[in-house]
Image 1 (cartoon, one colour):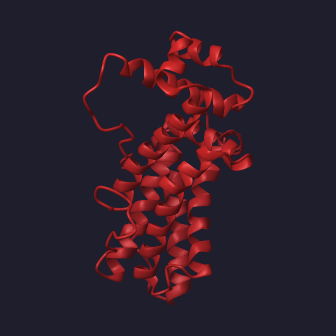
Image 2 (tube, rainbow, N blue to C red):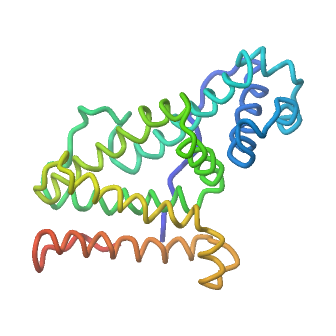
Length: 239
């Protein structure tokens, strides 16, 4: 049974204006990802959020501030998921300790991959996040800097550290960094290529049963890479 990561944000004390602010961020995330920043008007965002158009200036100073807030929401959301998936405690700082031995590190890699699939492939919210990020990657702005510094770099670095502990290959070697990109990339494809995958597989949707099948294949891939790097008989744990 695949346990999906909890993508909910931590509870905190909220002001009466907080629901409006949150609705605007969600609307911006959705519309910026779907239509692009320049193709989305503040009026459209306000309508999507069910808010007064003046509330955008009140809460964010304008459309650009709202884009930054959407980027910060992505960072906060993925940090929470990655913290669970990578066993990094309360955060993804560079000083986080790796697993204490290669076997434990390999087990951590399998767990991280499974939970990555559980969020990126299975969670509806991940679709809006990925769309927003893909637009930023195509046309970088300061929002991408916030996402890269808050999520991409520390998460990738953490996975590289785990890889070093599991295989003995240096975390910051070119080969390790590229290997980690391939592990992440295969998962991302099942989100950005979702429609093509469903058509080719004959799936009406990607639910728990389909996610389990994706997990099985992606962990097989990780198993094969680890076995090839360490020699026969040195395979990681199967899910």
